[in-house]
Length: 321
Image (tube, rainbow, N blue to C red; front, side, top):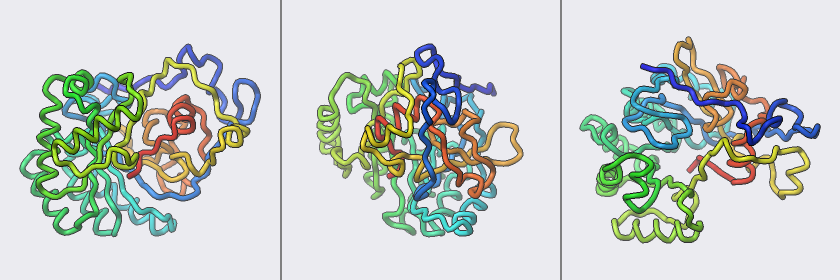
């Protein structure tokens, strides 16, 4: 399989910026974020996916195994470390790739639920999730741990043509089938969409609300935790660097930024051990690799990437439920 990794260097739009972890291009002190309240621990199950989207931020595809499948045996020690480090984690998140391509997916979900955590799974709700073994495993878990699993389905738009433009012809119908199965089997659902269609947020949410009502999905389109609308992470767009003075100017607190409350565990192809990253959005940038343990990952994160500015500080993004 090919090892495909997206570029991490700043584009020409940001020449001279995001070079020094501690100082911005104009010589100001770069803002940083301490891990003030770790609420979500993410596990990337691997970058392999059943489809290849037009603008996947992590370049997931049927051939990209830059992040390999995480195993149950590799995951469990991190659940132990949560208790050892006394992290107030309430939620375990699984992302990919497509998590249901990982053969240990049901076992890893069960391990998190048995520890008392809520579980959030990001999925396209297509064939990998709809395999008989996965469906039965999910039903068993949802029966044993009612209300503890949230399935966040990637639905880029409520109009089939726009969703299919991003994910491929026919994908909307397959995702809708999966969502119907989740609905009929009593699963809690959320949706992740995109904001690149030239619509206002109000228009987007109204469209999703009508779509949910039409299909009997108990998802609140007006609740950002249930219907998450992500901006495109375009590296060609110029963004400002975030300095320490920005917090006061923007009236924003470091604790509101995603890396104040979460970390992500991944395993790189060829690595002997998993590693902990500062952010779910920067899976390939070694600067945001914090170490092999949760103790290593307790250090501050320097906001030294365009995504830190555009997506998290200025855009106010959050990946948790």
